[in-house]
Image (tube, rainbow, N blue to C red; front, side, top):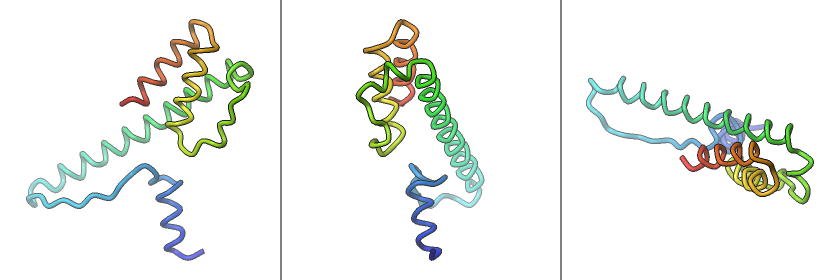
Length: 111
């Protein structure tokens, strides 16, 4: 596989998915501030994705048979869409705890 193909695959489905490249002109004295802010944003984004992934796993562990009655999560391309579908199913088909988990998931995706 060529290096260009590996880079493209990394940006589409790897660690850099959902990230975009930005080029800005800033004063030399502020360069480190911008770099640290970017690092914080990337870390926050990755933590958010991990929380969403954990919420989906928790919902499927607790309510899997009720949730996945007619739902095929493998057909959905990204995590945000999966979270919305699972959260809606939790709120419609689950108990009070499932409703709370679904609301939390929707709030997290809405950010």
